[in-house]
Length: 324
Image (cartoon, rainbow, N blue to C red):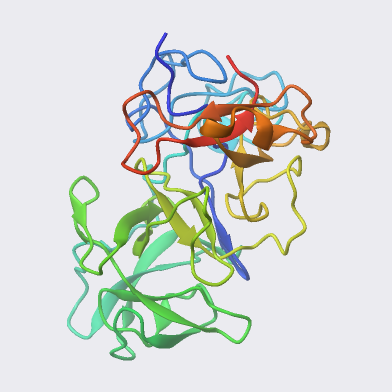
């Protein structure tokens, strides 16, 4: 039987210390098909309001999560973790309906002298909305920049550019936003790809990378793109304190060389009740050798891509977890 990409991500949200991405999960319209995955059956009876992941996974409870969809997971579909959440069996969608989207980061449809920017609307350090802000500078892709209040949306990059990868002093690098549309996006900077995150509040041209080489600049992590079959570079927010088997909610809180996966796929003892668990990338050419010594005794190297679907150079990418 044909395998999916992987069972994988419970959390498409990323954390770029000190800024937090929220997790958003939808359903099956992305690279994964609706056949049986490496970690479980397909969930093609779930609602189809997303664009990338492959269905519903069991949360740490017994509710059915099919109710009012307000996010607390208590069996009424609202996601508080005490029911079956409409979560992610594959890679979480980040393009669900978002009432906080008041301008279009692709179209840049704000009045003259302003730009459309992602920002944190509720003070939880997570970009979850867009708004028009004054253009405060002309920084272009790759230029140093500064941002006001981290996730305020106010920075000194030009229109169509965002201050990214901020350090503790609020200094980062201007990153160009994608052009086109979510369905047909493009990036001008060389060796970048369009990454759409946080329910469409962010669209960024970020570097491509190889998860087996972890070849990002500096201490950045190489993790899966939630909206395509590639990988991209993002700040390491683990602090080196999240080895394999560590619970995770956000995609870049695991140590370098790891990713946040469904705990049913990698059931580390410390991950019981968590929505995610850190597991290791592995090279399928090495068999299961890269998965030895991990806190899941029966972990094997499961290929990340379905047969024949890997981009060039990514054919050997795997993730340690339970097979079949």
